[in-house]
Amino acid sequence: MSMASTNIMLRKLVHTLEKQKKSLWRTVAEELSSSSRKRPYINLYKINKYSKPNDIIIVPGKVLGIGSLDHPVTVVALSFSKTAKEKIEKSGGKVMSLYKAIQELKDFKGKTVRLMKQ
Image (tube, rainbow, N blue to C red; front, side, top):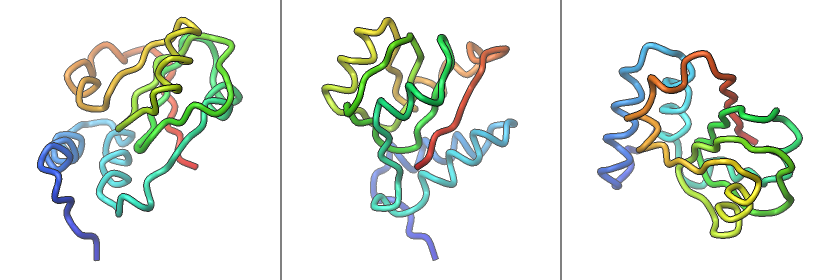
């Protein structure tokens, strides 16, 4: 039995994601609905290893700053550590919250989007 988050913004985000046509967004909603302890923590070295320049990486959890990026990527996540944000921007990439990504879904068409979870 999954408990609904007490965070109203997060509940609204999950609801919006569930209404999307793409199964990717429904998968992200499912991940965000789980316990906060089960949400993924992804380090930069993993994003660097499994992405190509200009990819869009979606993390239904937190991005941490261990490792480095040697190419620009757009990282969309629930939250970021301070060092992760700095390193992503330093590599020429962009940092975007899931909340903002929802408003800009149309910009993702035709781009390589990858979901990372553990």
